[in-house]
Length: 548
Image (cartoon, rainbow, N blue to C red; front, side, top):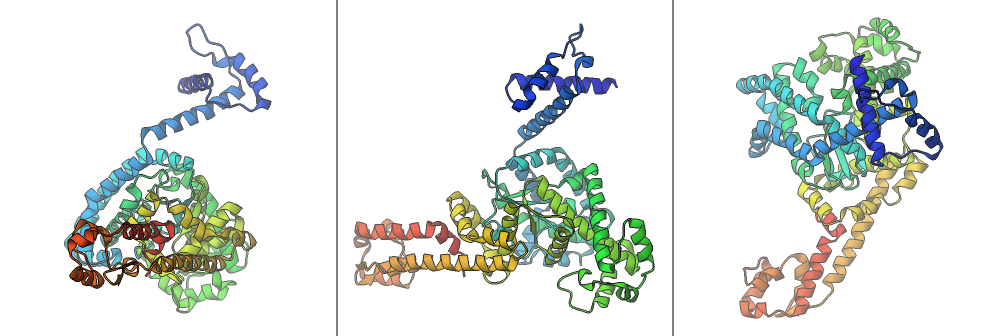
């Protein structure tokens, strides 16, 4: 009791200091009652607050004030950019050699991880050190997670919260598409998200995921460590992975959603886990499951699996489920999938609300379960609907009509932000999407079509500007310098400096005119070069520079 009393006195002193500094705003209709409550507080002869004079109104207010005080202290202790740089320094120093080897051998993350687990010595070393790596990483996140969350909550930016999988696909950098519209992409730490694998998996599984995650994570290093007021990418653990109370809360909600999904699968109501377990216990084979399903379309293992559903059930039993549980029971596996998949979708929705962002899902299978989650019990605000449409639309466009979007390099995204091109690009891409999202909240493919139209219209406008610049007939030594400039044939900067020029057209000019005459190029040529540079540095010029 003594500890609680001392904590209350500390909170009351914080409240007093905050009131005296003018940091607390009190609504007009509460002022009189609060003044009365505060006026009744007295100090004892020992100089400490007499808790008997403190009513419930003041106690409640002190609790909120103390929390905000601690929150401010956590934010002041470390900045978001310092958290990012410390995280990447840790990963680079411990696992950077894996990314270097993968690059030297031209292997992607999955190829390298698959290759390395064929080497027994490498498997032994990586799997043995994985636990030490995770332990150190856990200590790091335990010390900075609250600071990271508070910074992200207060970040006045559009935010996309990644979920539905351990980490975005290794095949492309997700920021290459989504980062053209969303200010900040928040990614969970894949090492920490894979803790269950590092705790219970085989030596090969540990080595595989350690190598794969290292290579995948490090491709985001430059995007995450570039210091912008609205960072392009942030790595942060989510509360469900570090907070036991949050984990319990998530499990409770996920259980409800899992039961709803199982009810939809089998066409009967399950009110408790026990009811579902009893029912599932009778379905020990894929054949029995198939004979009981009412809505087979909701039994989804992987959108890329094309074999008959009964064969998919067998495949799933022999896959990760079998490796982790060694349980060949089909009914239990499907019940586990209901809770696991809906828990994943619920976790992402909670993360998004907690950090005031929109869900970002890379995996098509997870996307389908997320939509079922929304169907069962949730909805997004109109603002988040529009952002969700843009995020999903850009991902689809980058994989279909405009695949170059998914290949824009990190340094180009950074340049766009530095040059102030981001807002114009975002406005062009998002034109008309909010109206579509409101009119048809589930019409994501319509959004993709609209984004494609926006891109192609913007490209047509950009090419008109290029064409107009090319039409400027400025000749030198019999050559049309205007068209050469746009095509990259002559570099005026090199000519003025007297350094070698490049390209067939430049070579021809160099044969006809000596360097001193080239240095005497009239001002109008410099102006033309400046116009070309301005066009390339314009927001849409920077955007389309990566269009193949």
